[in-house]
Image (cartoon, rainbow, N blue to C red):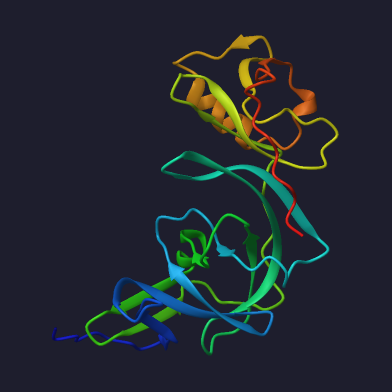
Length: 231
């Protein structure tokens, strides 16, 4: 409650510590301007994303990547969504513009600021006074931009011990369906000992056409449907 801290070099943010119904919240809602439009974003250190915007109609760019796959879990299990990702100008308070990847999702009902954006700043959060401050860790250069570094597929070790495709980019020449199990890579079988290594390798390989893969396709009745692309 003493709230003694040095704000030298920090910028005070436009932030809300109240929920939509007016009650106090432990999670700050930070206001950002996306393409000249002001939104509130949940400050979510548990989200492995830059910015997630639930608005389905504005801000999408021509140069975007469309991805489909598992993005989070609710009480019913994995939530499958089609997501468009593009680079947009983002302004936080009086800071310079930062070109940042924005994810547009149909299945989320709030705007979210994830750890990939949060980690570019130092923060002071004073819930007692209801204020927040931020300072860029690196100089923000308007022309720098942020590239979208999404690979062809995302795999993970599922509860049954298999290395399974859980997400992929659309519009590829060849697309393995969601739920496809990777049995071997270049003749080497996937085992409990090497599954983590191969998950990392595959998730960081953009062109799978050069790999010899033995796969087990999902059964037709169990194949995960692909949601429609957001309009």
